[in-house]
Length: 192
Image (cartoon, rainbow, N blue to C red):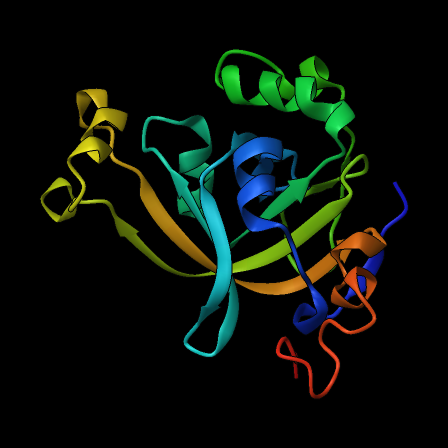
């Protein structure tokens, strides 16, 4: 996949559809050492916290990737073209404890610029993140009663905020590619 470096302040993503319909592949661990795992994630977000661009992901402690998230200082998020949906379904339904996910899904890991984790050659978007905060979901803080329906066995997610260090993506993830007026000085969506 042909990607280009995109400045973080020019990075744009259709947040609801890419998380909810297309999903991401979260990778944690050390690519060069061959000690990493990846999992499909469909819950998360992008934004700004403490004046830094961030990606937020959640991982249950029961997931194999959790141990890699806990050990490492960073993680990557990759989005793929719709043709890769089956590969993401495989990575979300199989555990790296039991199967070789790379062999099973057929994705090609690649080294990244700023973090130890891999990206994937087939990805149209690679976001490199350094962990900056974590916290565990607490059921006593759930304000909507239906949230608890997502947790059988009290396997509550750990939330990680990662500062976005680098973005490599196809042109459609650059804000200037959306519209010549979007982000222009004087427009209601001016980005500076």
